[in-house]
Image (cartoon, rainbow, N blue to C red):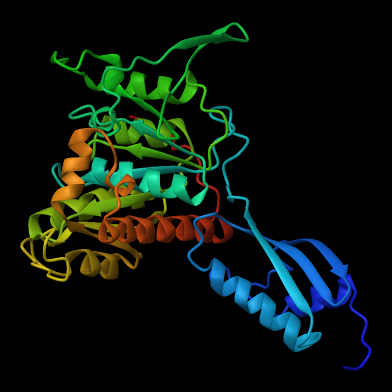
Length: 368
């Protein structure tokens, strides 16, 4: 082997040939290469990903190794550490300053499993290493406390800087607050629009969220005061539309999607998740029965030119786990785990692309 000299400049030169597949720029330009160390016939460096849930991390790592071997020497040992710093366009706002991304989880109609999807996306993102919170703003059926086995918990209050702050409930590593925590589980409370909107504002302004990478908002079905309050109160990173393959669900999902796309609201659509995409019996895991129709989520995504983030099968264990007080991804069913992990990775990927390519979302100012 001939003598050759490796220095940091040459390492950076080699790595500047590696493109971040989503952002279409090289890793050096994007500032993703840090802590380069040169040893005897060895190169170490850190790649800072845009999210710990990056689905392309192994590809990026492999491309970095290949670039060093190709441009410097095929014999040098390459040691790569992967870390992540979730990107944001909304740090600095007066409310929730430590929350990097607010993501609205929306559906056109009820009964499509929006809260189940929210709970499991949150757990899948948390498992990747992200800091995650949930606001359950669904006044018609606040299901998040039940799905996290937290229906009897009460948030505590802590005074700070002369103001009382609500402490979110922490369960399975997720911070959460719900309209369900504010009312006894067995009594009916009639929420007028202004009351619900005021509660949501408190969940943002009077809750101590600390630092979060992703705060998911489980919205009521349809389009309502709550949706307007959300977009008027904080800058929303983007929205996810949950639908089932049925025609009637898709028709309602389109209305929800178009609400976020109205010029005065202008919240980016991160993508569509098709829930109950097919039925798979526990004992026949290779079988798929398309009982609600087929391909509806894909056709909706195609029509509005947004990604299909994931397809979640209808599996009895998902419902059972939610009823027993834990998101289904905490169990070991590989079909369930893969479906939600893929959807969470796709969502994190779209958030990173959105933060790199689109303008900051600003709170909506609507004259009613």
